[in-house]
Every structure is written in structure tokens, then in C-alpha cells.
Amino acid sequence: MLLSLRVFDRETDRLRERAMIVPRELDRLAKELGVHQELLDEQERTLQDLRLERRAAEREVETSKQRRREFEAKQFQIRNNQAYQANLREIETMKQKASQADDRILEIMEQEEEIQKEIDRLQAVVDEERRKHDLAADGLKEELKEVEADLAKIEGERSEVIERLSPPLRSKYERIRKSKGDLAIVGVDGGACGGCGYALPPQRLQEIRRNRALVICEGCGRILVWPEQEHVS
Ligand SMILES: [Zn+2]
Image (cartoon, rainbow, N blue to C red):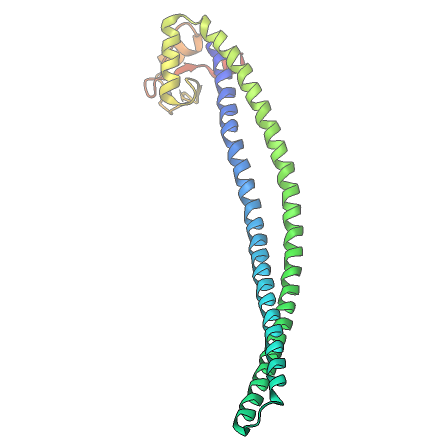
């Protein structure tokens, strides 16, 4: 019974570890995808800012043209030479303002085009990453479901065996398992305890090999079994 427990325990530990690792792997995948998505979002924000800036420049062009027309309309009514010159300068200023804003619009449009290309590239990367992520995540979720089902099954079988142990042995076993956090039952390995490496006296080795009494390792307190028996379940 102890030997079959050993097999169940080993499998339970393996499954529990997997059940812990899978959600972390899912988390890591989601973070990787998030990094690419973040880069894409950043470019989209930049594009948005450029569009706003271009719209402001377009309004600037309209305003400057409008004011220029107003100054031009006034030009014929001015009799005073100084005022006439001042009005001319205003017209010139409005021309320059509109022209500068036009240049800025062209610059922004070029930048927008570059950023749009980068966005298209990043979008393709994100799409591909998402496809890979979804595929891997589906696989991991499926695996987690299987692991949990296996775990429930094995824990059921394991508790059936535990129920059949004598109460003192059961509590001893449970105590060792709890305190060690891993296997409560270990094999002899080259004349020493397979759990802690404690060198076993020949007499103890005899006892374990004969399998007549329960032998506890003096080094780590685990229950010892002879290696050939390990495969029995
Ligand atoms: Zn030991």
C-alpha cells in the first residue's frame, strides 16, 4: 500500500506543479502580447496627435486667408500713406502665416504616412502574435482541464489507499508528507537514503530489503523502501 501511495504521491506532485505552472504560462503569454499591443497603441496615439495638429494648421490657413482678404478690402479706403504701408505689411504677414501653416500641413501629412506604415506593420505583428497566443492559450487551458481531471481522479484513488492504512501508520505518513512537502516514501539509493543521502547501516538495509517492518530514515524521517519494490504499484 505504501508503495502504491508512493506512485500516487509522485504523480500528484507532478500534476499539482503543472497545475500551478500553466496559469503562469498563460499570464506570460498575455504579457508578451500586451507589449506589442502597447507599441501599436503608442503609434496610434501619435497619429491621433498629428491629425489634431494638422486640423489646427488647416484652421490657421483659413483664418489667415480670411484676415488677409479683410486687409485687402480695406486697402482701397486708406488715404494715409503710413496706414497704407502698415496695412500692406499685415497682408504680407497673413500671406506668410498661411504659407507656413501650409508647409506644416505637408510635413505632418508625410509624418502621418510614415506612422500609418508603422501602424500597419505593427498591426500585422499583433495579429500574428494574437493568433499564436490564442492557439497556445487554448492548448494550455485544455491541458489544465486534463491535469485537474487527472488530479481529482488520482487524489480519489490515493485517499482510498490512505483509508486502508492503520491509523498510526496513516498519521505517520501524513505527518512526513506534510513536513517534507514532497515524497514521504523514498527508495534506498546506493546504500543511502534516496531522500537525504543518509548512509544506512547494513542492519537497516537488511530490514528494508526483507520488507518485514517499517523503516524510517534517521536522517530525514521518511519511510524507506527497497529500490526493486519501487516499481510495484
Ligand atoms: Zn533520509
